[in-house]
Image (cartoon, rainbow, N blue to C red; front, side, top):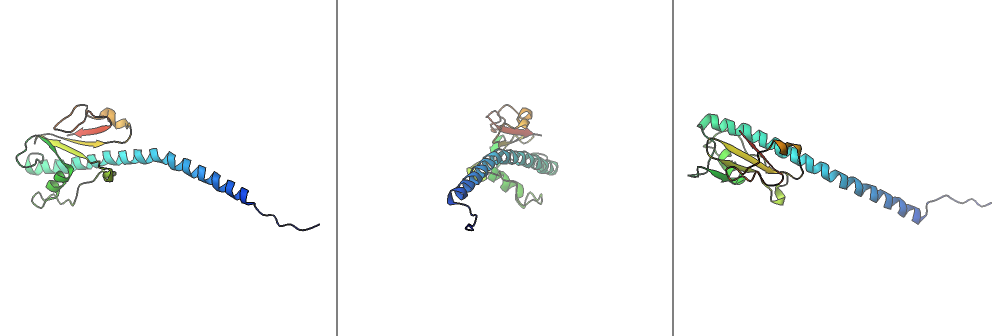
Length: 153
């Protein structure tokens, strides 16, 4: 009797690699929805944190931040960030949070009339918090659009 070494054939190795590839891709696809939900939860948390900063601003100045002579309407998030982090405002904050998918062009939204405000974020999923969200466009923030979460004071 000859002694043969037991070894895996090339076909068996390719089958194992293919099975691992299918399992890995299904896991990655399954995690996509979890990642979107996590980004949505971060967006909502970010807006809640910005609300605290807005209340600090209101307590200091007696109105919510506006842009120049504009008394009612929306302000771009970049301009809002500039106002809130300026040395003149002196709230001791370096920057406001940015949307976790800001590379895709998404941004948070801010609108005000000076005595009230609306903060908004475009969510990726049908999040349960959308039922608590405003349903009409306010101060130029499109709260009635699909998957837009809005909060106010």
